Length: 138
Image (cartoon, rainbow, N blue to C red; front, side, top):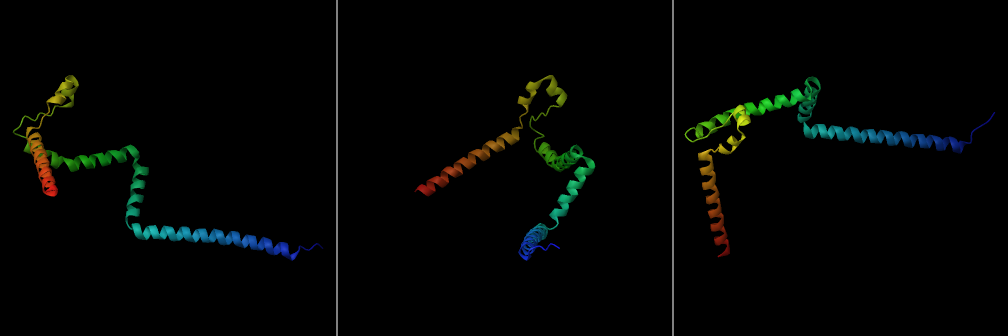
């Protein structure tokens, strides 16, 4: 009967124990890191998972189209207020058919009130900046 030397058996057990210990410690650190992320992120993780599930379910193009519809619905009241603000100026927003027939119409879209307000605010900002610089220098 052949007997293994005791030293070889203890070394292989020691190596096995070290491998198991390293594997378990990595697993514990990974588990603690995931738990920390879950605690710090909170409900945003579930929102991300829901969005990923929606992408898987509906497909990427439908998912992007839903976000586009959301932004369009969000900007609709703002655009109505802007058109109401510009209703007395010569704001002409041509349709796609008109632009396709005559591309130079793009240059004739001039919101007068917006341009005037932008110019006045630019001039005022420049004057205030120059005045502040003169106060700082003197």
